[in-house]
Length: 126
Image (cartoon, rainbow, N blue to C red; front, side):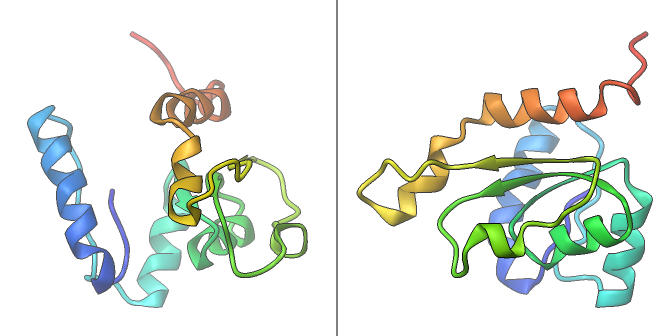
């Protein structure tokens, strides 16, 4: 399930296309939910993949497992990092000289590995 505000429509359309190309079942709710609906969605999923965002804090508050991909932010991470269980933070080290490239230090493979490690007790393989 993809969620986000209207500013994320273009990016999530690319993800939607990739998912469709791979015949992966999904829903794209980008720009189609209000805050109450977003809280309900986050609290109903097994895991949220997010950035340092309001959605991350909603997941923490609703005790939803999450993987947060953290790059260069506007506040010190140690102050805003949720103190909860069922979460993993992937924090970019910031070795790039280009601030916009810092988040790319966390590979897609690392994100997938992290998701599976957090969900390992919830997944049944057939």
